[in-house]
Length: 408
Image (cartoon, rainbow, N blue to C red; front, side, top):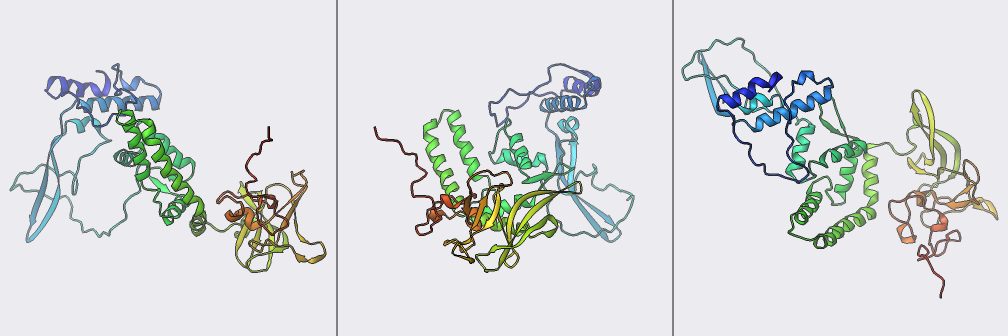
């Protein structure tokens, strides 16, 4: 052995400190145990990341070859004049593997590690302090604690756990601070609240754990692929359909944590006031455009209709110019959607759109009516897709999305 680990390695060999590593309880068959193959002085490794990885592998290997730590959980009572003070903690008799595996593993109970004392010992306190305290909430999980919980609950393997953790950060469900602790974002909290309100606690590991357990049974030869696919797909399908049907609960959960679309005047600008009639309050809605502040430069984003009375914003198509549709025989009468009573908007050429034009209801465009051909939670629903039986603008037909073939 070379470098900072040489003395510890020599102690294992010369002081009867070595023991054969135990067989672990988990083996995902992803790869053999990672072990150091060559003795290298870590200080000769120039790259900091490579040096840190090498140190971790060597320390873990030496710890696996070490004997158990030995300690005693102890209660120490110290008498000062007529007062007695008590401390509960751990007296470590032999550190063994803990000595090499610091700082990644600590062994402590109660008030931590206590000095080794004999009954009747006399001590001289270095200071006397009276501290005030209060109960505090638990700290957010560290990455190591999250990995341990995932492993304990059967979620992921050594090869996939890192990807799961990366995914929740890429989707902005959680962020990691400088102490490697995870904090849920407002989006993550809203997502959990929305799913829980549907009766599916998808933030809990149950569904994923069951699926991975079934896959492990196939890998171990106890079940076949055909045995598990249909039950798993059935559960996933039921969950998906339920979430689609109750997508509004997700909207409600998000609305509790984020301002409604168009509500923030600092990040949106009115393009045309009194544009069309609201289907809820019959007051006039304005066309607004949301903006993103990038280095003090306002970048325009999507357009929307906003009702100041209802405090409600409804998205508009990303391309095209817009006209509020009125009765051609009486231009003072708005043409309204028979489903939700919002004034119909006509999309015409302009702003990147070169088509023949089409009509859409702003409410149905954002929240498609399932009973008239819409798909819950999809959006972008236009009049030519609608199957309403009496509306003259509805161009869809039941079964119209099924491909038809000519007779032979």
